[in-house]
Length: 208
Image (cartoon, rainbow, N blue to C red; front, side, top):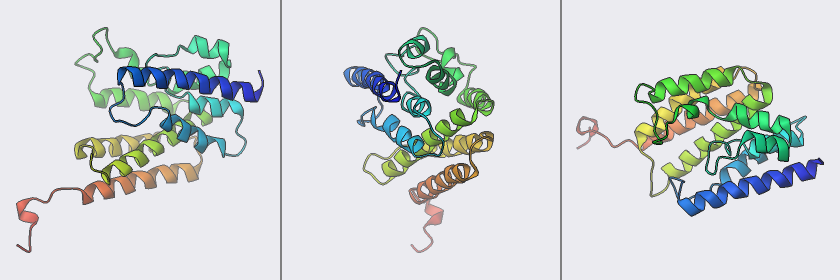
């Protein structure tokens, strides 16, 4: 399959996920699903020595864990086996713990699940880790934008994501040093902006 065909077919699969998410209101915010994978794809597309397989992997990085849950077998058959491998490696293994009722077992806390996911990613190849770093950076940029908006995310969630992203940056040992620095700087910026959004306690009101 030609490079153009691989990209066009990947865009078609992302559109399927976009349609499903819109139809069933699966996204937490009112942002369109497709914007995030397109930005991650754009980040990867400008990197040295990248091929259409990595670009497609970045675009499809979460289609296996988002409704309608595109199967890895379908990606392998319709696009390319390597793209399917990227998507499989980028899918959090903790997602497999979700039961028929749509929830995680009680003993699998978020901390325990994230530890599992980060350990999995630490063993992945350069491009999988690179796509994951771009994915994380884009989520951080979204949170920063949200913190400046009217519908601010809960700060406890923001701080939790900062901690998880720091752990992820330390675990992605195969990524380029500049990309690791970019990710860590993004976490630092997010934490700083979150700190500015803190509501001061009474004891902090020193001038009143």
